[in-house]
Length: 254
Ligand code: GLN
Image (cartoon, rainbow, N blue to C red):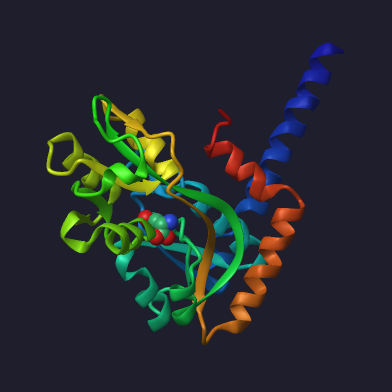
């Protein structure tokens, strides 16, 4: 009796696995779905970075964009490019949407539309553990490393002069320059800062918030229909807890 029961159970399991496989096999259906092309700079952990395989872009933005695409019945494709070409790419239609830990500001609002905001970013200052820099005011006259085109770059250039600011194509290169003494500090968003400090010895983040900002996705001003659809999807993902769950997965409470 037991044996027969086990056999029936086994048959049922195989049958249900087959059924699952069938319904998951959406490769052909995917081809017919419209594409949502996202531009990002995948050197900004935990918002966007490469998985250990070195090929897949993962992170908060990748997951939120995937959830938005799923809601809209679209297939997500992610294009990795330099941070300072992202807004041009979305304006020219090379990508449909930018998710890049992108800060909302007035200047950018002139050239693109922003979605609802989904996270907060804080510009912080990374220094060597034995640095004499302790506050924002101490940055005067120092050489500051930034990621080109970011809000950190804009603030520091405005406040301390272009001659004191060294631009790098990504945060990791700016941090490497801090390690080898080319710059005295790096101004960058807090979450990537934490990740860079964790993976580099002898660095610390100053306990001072240089600027608090909102992150949102950017879409072309010519594509108001997509902006409306993305906002609707993001609002639903906020309401049902998906966005908060994704944030909590990558940002551990202190
Ligand atoms: N939040 C910053 C900005 O929008 C940096 C974003 C980034 O480097 N990916 O300028």
